Length: 563
Image (cartoon, rainbow, N blue to C red):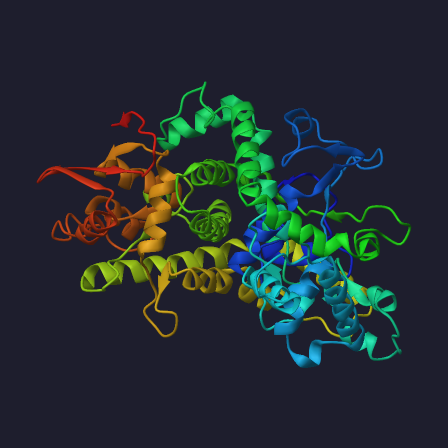
């Protein structure tokens, strides 16, 4: 069974414990089908931007210090590690102001509407207009439309369960759920009464996926430098001991700087305006929502990730830093970071499954450094043989995930849990693998890959791996350092190391054998012609001759060429 990072007490036996699920036992707590791509990034940045504790030790900055990561505190003198805790801001007033007017009528409780009107009245009193023909009502409507324009996800939900795009710290908020059924059972006369009927700890939409990605970064940073260097050399990555890419101390600084730069890249007037709407008029709401019943700061406990997932976590750390340093538009950067988070979820599921799927023979000899190989087909689907190889690759990934969560140790633990349920007199004992497959396992993998365009078609048979313009842009900006120029062959090799994607005849032959098919000598020599055309259309391909080309990552600063 995977060792947990941090080594907290896992909820295996407690009724309803998240760790009872077979897929959670393998992949960590937790990647979940109901969490959207945007909310993966929102939750990752929420943890980074919030106040944090490990045990009783506060964490300053976006990441815990290296000393704290390497000497993780225990939980109450026990042998278990203390969980990482963070204190998310609810920002109810800002959400109410921004989203109530665009929410469903049935989700607007009378107390919500009255408090919304009070907010508008107070904001209106604070507005001073000098010159011009705009009225205060015009300014209010403009402000509402401005913040509504930052809506990230959840337009069909209750206003409080929606999320902003994570443009800055002032727009990053935790999850709040309105207890609609309970609120109908009692007469609520004021906003203060209604505040008791918001839940801030259910994690239905911010479902811990971003927390797990954050823990993977922490997991990498506590690894010894020798361990990282050994794996990068074996994988074929070009790093040096004194670079931020292989030295945990330098990587910690680079990641912290990337988080801070990302969270601080927003006009200050917008941040101040958001803070004023949320707390400048009504501070009592924040004190109520961000504190527990005893009046102390309300903290949320993170789960855990597999300790052995540091390898894919290391690649994620490199890619996150490179993407944050890329000289591109900030909104595009956020969109690509969302895509990167989704790709990391897929990579984590595949890599962990490859470690535990009982696949005999030499199939693993044809895999990439993380134990799998994805045969990528041309987007148009004109190459029939390539389409068949890619379809087989998709089916192999599904089968590997299916087999991995049925590892003998997990099966034994699931059996023990069901025996305990019977002994307790449980009225209904369902098969946990039904939910594991659909919401955490191979069906979730397939759905997420289709959602981001890595697998097509979205519906119907013949699912195969493809790369569209957006995914290709992500590959360029994450496998290359900003401004770096490499040969076309090196670019394909780096993409294979990072993401396990196979493009040309040799790597596709290996991918075919990894999938359980036959190897081959050639597919006609044009299996990756579509990739070169897409790189050329993207403006990053430099043709030196008919047989030699370079790929360059865009940047204002040009680095040395890597061979």
